[in-house]
Image (tube, rainbow over all chains, first blue to last red; front, side):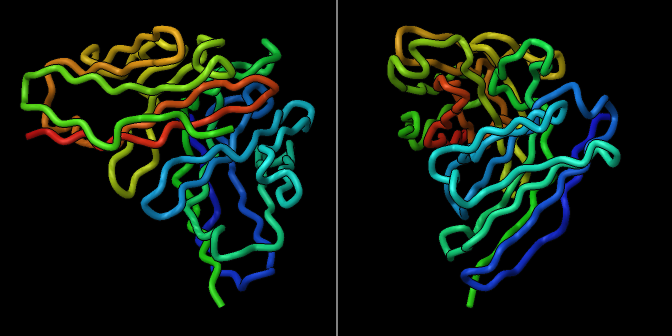
Length: 125
Length: 110
């Protein structure tokens, strides 16, 4: 079945970096955009950006543009989200999610139809 | 992008209908028919219940429906059931590859 499986929880010190992975299965990896989102404790969902697994093209939200990098390794159907210069404000549950629109139509629908299980990132000194 | 505005909470009795609003601007909700809605239980990942304003995935109950008027999208849950008690989020495409989520609504079944 279609699945997105994320890497495990992380605990980091302020100023450190974190890299979260999202392994795709059950469909052709290069066919659908992957979003990264986060949810701080008790807060709303927040869109961080997305990656086109077919060509590696990325978009980062303005808030994350200078600290986040999204990459993919096609041979293992995995996308990665790396965030640098972590602060306590980055403590959150991080999700990857598939956009329901195929990359073939050249535009996202921002309708995330399959989600990873989430990865908790805790930033604490 | 500022978050889309949703009521913090909405409640209803079993069997009733409730509507959750999602207010944006002409830069997002008002300009694109790309509004989606998500249901989230505590400690769980969100689940897509409506895409492209009105489209319902096949596995989602037909008690869920979506609509839009000007800068405000709405999610209606009819025949409210105990299992509908959850948090609900809207999301809209906002142009230039960006997306924006709503502030979230807690639905309580009385």
